[in-house]
Length: 415
Image (cartoon, rainbow, N blue to C red; front, top):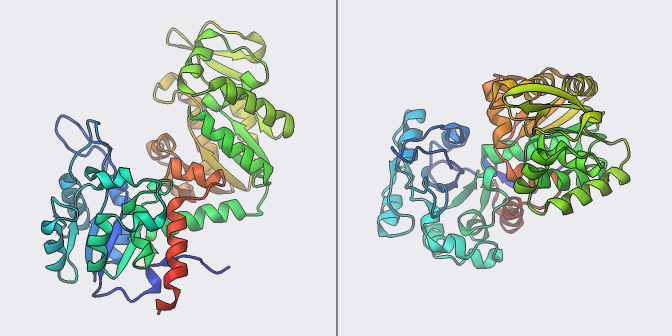
């Protein structure tokens, strides 16, 4: 199958000037401005190293206006330099004279990190505009003529359409960086795999996203079965007519926008795909800090559901053992509290040990995988939360569109 996007291997990049768009949006301590976790920065090191013979100008964002962690990229440049063992010069400008002069003065092997793209109004003002219009943003018009190539490696932002992400590929060749290339390749492999049974396990509290993904995956035969945990399970249990009790129901109404509509959609899916969507047969409630197992027949409950139950864990483990392709997104319960981490721990460990091709993603999911030390047992740990969900739901990602459009425009220039 031919690729419809460029990678770093398609052009002679040595000696050229390259603009690299990454997603190094990191948790920041608002009191000190220090980066609390540099996982996102580490993800991009392979791409930066493969561009070591270029003049490299890095574009990135941090948070958004109004938030405590909305800050400059000075700390990010320092951290990247430390991880690389090479200088990364922070430039406190994105497309002003200071930035232009810094790029022009570079020699092969030099790296500069430009200012937070979200400091500039165009980035938000032209969000979701047509690609041709984003290409006319001042940052694109100013920076693109200074470079021969634009490398797009910000998979975690792949569901966003903004000038710094989608504008440059219209005027210079856009290439997938190593993070982007790996994400597209590995997720596509899992989606297209005929190694069955194929199972998706959806948990966490972003239940509305999981309903859309469940619909797409079952309607298109991408998976044979969906196992639900966490808030997703609560939604489908409500759709089955089970009254979980006021504490859990009120929590779900607060956390899930348009909760009644999503319950109705879940009910429709249960009817349309009988036997394909599994819900817990028992759960654990938080009885004033104590874990108490309840069978569904014992509901409604006076306390909130905090985890899946023991019988459900065993049943799901059996399903996971049989699977040959697995998607995992979202914890099974309130894993941050030790008493209620059992479901998440057991399900994640079962997935890691399964003889299947395994793709996991989402912020909390990746955090648990790392916490349990399971990374090496997972075939692909995705850097994307919303981006991965959108890809699994069959939605076109603006960054993939940008890469494909650029490929169509500049295909004749490859070596």
